[in-house]
Length: 114
Length: 110
Image 1: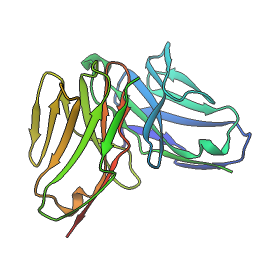
Image 2: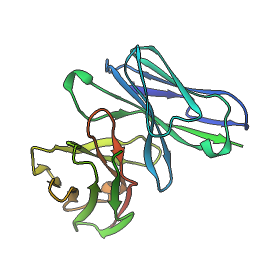
Image 3: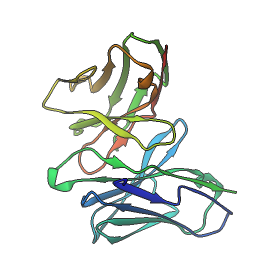
C-alpha cells in the first residue's frame, strides 16, 4: 500500500465551487505539506503543518485553507475555485524527529476548474 | 524568501553519456539541498541530498556537488540509461520550508 495517498486523483469542478482535497499517510510522520505544480513553475508551497495544532502559510496560500484532522490526515480546501487554480496538487510528509530532512510525496491530484 | 534557479529546462543525452543539472540559490541560510526525480504521473521522489557541511556526495551513478561560496549546487548522472528519463527538481531549505527549482526534463536517447 502507498505510504502517502491523495483523494481524489482527478477532479473537474466549476468556478465558484468549494472543493476539498484529502491526504492521508501511514508513515507516522509529524510534518505534512501541500504544494501545487504548474508547468514551468516547479513546486510551490501552499501550507504546511508540523503537528495537529500547527498550521503555517506557505508562498501561495491566498484562496486556500487547510485542516489537520489528525497526525495522519491533512486536507486542502479551495473555498471558491477559480480557473487559475487549475494545477497538479501534491501532499508531502517528512519526519520532524529527524530534523531537516527530505519529503515523501503523494501521487498527486489533478484539479481542473472550468 | 529563497529563490532557486535551475538550468537547463530540457536536456537530451545519448545513452551512456553524462548529464549535469545546475541550480543556484539566493539565501545564505539555506543548508539542506535535496534532489527529486519525477516520473510521468507520479509524485517526486528523493534521489540524493546534501547538507551544507559537505561539498560532495555520491550514490552509485548519481553525485551532487555544493559550492556554498558561489551558492550553487549540481546534480551529475553518469552512464545514463533510458530509465533515467524524467523531470528532475532541485530544492533548497533554510529551515522549515523548501523552495524548488522549475525542473529539468531529461531525455536519454537509446
